[in-house]
Structure formats: structure tokens, C-alpha cells
Length: 98
Image (cartoon, helix red, strand yellow):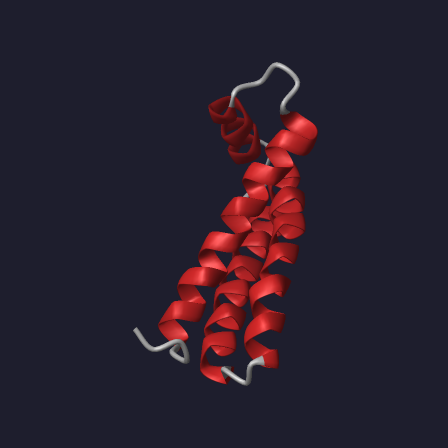
């Protein structure tokens, strides 16, 4: 598979925040709660879910900076589109689905 395709960037942009969610679980929420309880809490408390998702989006900077420095702009564009999609989800969680 070619490396300079938007689809690869979009998939990477969707995966890296999920890794961030797992990191956030082990960093702050691991005190006796299971991962399913953690996800259930994030789905029930939309404000907390929006905050955790916002922090997990920071991990998208890693592949975005890597691919822009390698001048693989289409892949970076896919990462940016996935980040924008997550941004819309965060806005919906924060302001609409209260």
C-alpha cells in the first residue's frame, strides 16, 4: 500500500485517539475500575467524555507531524480529517447530548 494516501491517514487518525483513551485509562482511571466501567462512565457523563476525548486527540499530533515532515501531505490530510471528525463528536458531546 502506498504511504501517501488519505485513507491511511484517516485510519491512523481514528486509531491514535483510541490509544490515547487507553493511556488515559491507565494514567487516571485505573483505580479499581475495569475498562468497560471506564467506557460506560465516559458514555454516561458526556462532559467528562468530551474532556477525555479532547486530551486523547493530542496523540494525533505524532503521525501528523511525522507525515508532514516527510512531505506525505495526502496522508496528513487524512489525519486532519479524522481529527475534525472527532472535533465534531466532541462538540456534540459537550453541547448537544447533555
